[in-house]
Length: 138
Image (cartoon, rainbow, N blue to C red; front, top):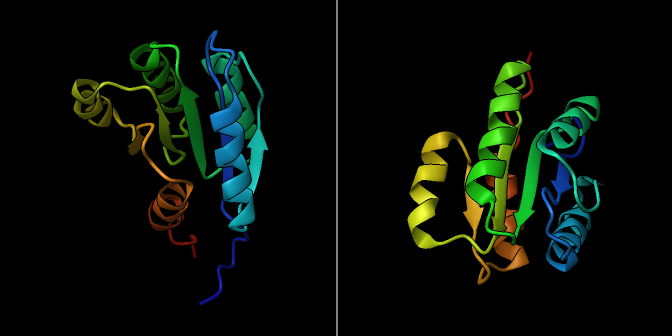
């Protein structure tokens, strides 16, 4: 079955002050290797910059990598900005060092998928394939 809309486009971003981007780069490469288009924003992006990039790039999803402990604030900020800009169709997922007790509240807020440090790139690629591509508008 062919997808008319081309490859899934994912913005991979490192919000906040966290300076560790190895994980984000590994995920970006895995998604790319799986045939997706990945826009990697680099370090120290604000939620506004990330949402701007996703909208400009017509992204299907935003993947956030957060190790700094500020995941509740940063995920919420990205989701609120997408709502404000009528871009709620962009799916938000992410990973990092996220305590178990924060996962359900983040999902309630609208984060579609959360991956903790044990998640494999294969799991994440599969999740994106299954959850991101909306049926093409006819």
